[in-house]
Length: 275
Ligand SMILES: C[S@@+](CC[C@H](N)C(=O)[O-])C[C@H]1O[C@@H](n2cnc3c(N)ncnc32)[C@H](O)[C@@H]1O
Image (cartoon, rainbow, N blue to C red; front, side, top):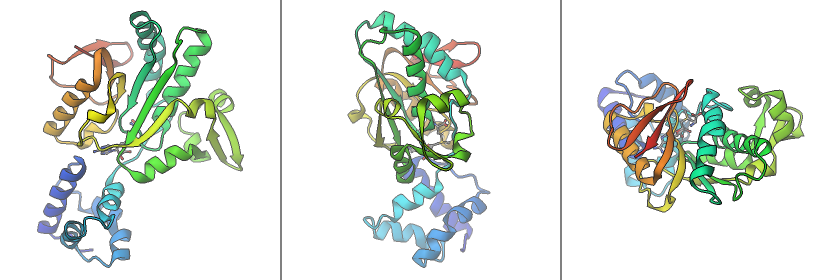
C-alpha cells in the first residue's frame, strides 16, 4: 500500500470527520497494518484512492468497514474495578434515595465487545442480591458503539477463554455465564436482558437517546482532539439528569467544564456529577 504524505493527510481528515479519531502524524504503520487486507481485497492501491472510493461510492459499505477497522476495541471485564464498586456502594444507593420507585437508566457509550455493559449488569445484580427489593423498578443499560463488528459480538454475548480470562473471577463466571462448548461461554439471559445494544456514533445527534442517570464513557475520548472531546462531554451532559454521574477511563480527566460537572473523589477513583 502506498502511504504518501498527501494520501495520509487526506485519510487523517476523512477519519476524524467520520468518527472523531485523530491520527498522529507518525501513524502510517498503524493505518497500513489495519487496512492492508481490506485494500487488497478491494484492489485499492493508496489511501488517497481509498478516500476517493468512499466519497464516490457512499453506499458501498466501504466507509463503515474502514472506520470499523480503525477503531481500537481493547476492553476487559470490570475494567479498573473501582467504577463497579462505586456504582454499587454510592451511585445506586443515592439514586434509590433520590428517586424512590424509579428505574435506573444507564448508558455505556463506547461498549466495544460488551464487557463494560455486561459488567455493569452483573454489578447491578450483585447490588440487588445484597439489597433485596430496593431497586424496585430495576435498571436499563443502553450500550452503544460505532463498530458493527463489535455490536454483533455484543449481541451474541459469547466469549472465548482468552476474553473470559481478562478480569472475570471464577465466582462471577460460575454465576453469570453458561458453557457453550469447549472454551466458550455465554452471558446468562438475566444479565443480557438489562442491556439494549444500539449502533451509535458519538459525533451524531444525541436526541434519540433520552436521559440517563449514569453514563460510562470510558477509554474512547483519548482518541479524539481536545475540541471534539469537549464537544462530546457537553453533549453527554445534556443527556444526564441533574445530579447524574459520568464515569471516564482511569487515565482520563475532564479538564475544565466547571459549569457543567462537579468532580467527586471516591477513593479510589474520580467520577463527575452533572450540575
Ligand atoms: C478502547 S474501546 C473502550 C471500551 C470500553 N468502554 C472500555 O473502557 O473497556 C473504544 C471503543 O470506542 C469505539 N468508538 C470509537 N470512536 C467512536 C465513535 N465516534 N462513536 C462511538 N464509538 C466509538 C470503538 O469502536 C471501541 O469499541
